[in-house]
Length: 224
Ligand SMILES: *[C@@H]1O[C@H](CO)[C@@H](O)[C@H](O)[C@H]1NC(C)=O
Ligand SMILES: *[C@@H]1O[C@H](CO)[C@@H](O)[C@H](O)[C@H]1NC(C)=O
Image 1 (tube, protein in one colour):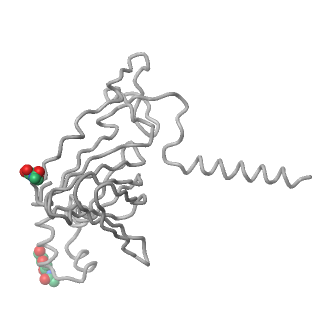
Image 2 (cartoon, rainbow, N blue to C red; image 1 turned 90 degrees about the horizontal axis):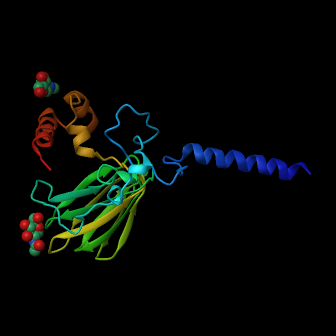
Image 3 (tube, rainbow, N blue to C red; image 1 turned 60 degrees about the vertical axis):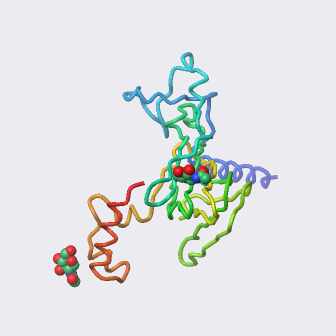
């Protein structure tokens, strides 16, 4: 007789822990449109809510993702983000979007999103994409994508995209956070402020002083 009861208790514990560990729990209201002007208000894993009476269609709206981003920079790519900062209505909903444009041979260099899994589809062109699994395997999982192909980058893993075609390329990605964040590997290692010590980086990469200082200089001079 006791078995179903214990099973029920276990099920409760499991569902409670899922609730505790999910980053952006299910909303307990229709929406909580972000009100960035209300700096005094209490925030719970997001921004303060606008009074629902004053919410408009434009709070859930963004226009312009058909326009290609300017890729004339050192990396040859441009991200056009559509996060809670562009659409306040995304607040607490655990979702965002972006458009990425790539010049010929342009690349979105290795980076991670600390708070989001990403699903990307190619609109135009040919992209090599990939991510690297965690230590100790560090396995590179990579594929060449054509128009209409879809690829997933699991949350937190280092990933990249590179234009492999003979024309500009573009993609649309959806991310499982209203504010996915980005950690660019080169910027964080060689471009931190204040900088990591050259001795530490010499020790980390087993290269000489000059090489580390060169990478530091390049990282601070590269502009996106
Ligand atoms: C490719 O992108 C560059 C930079 O954004 C742009 O100047 C150029 O016109 C684009 N080429 C084509 C064929 O669309
Ligand atoms: C490395 O370069 C710094 C200056 O950037 C210098 O002070 C230090 O002596 C150098 N160390 C070695 C081992 O060459």
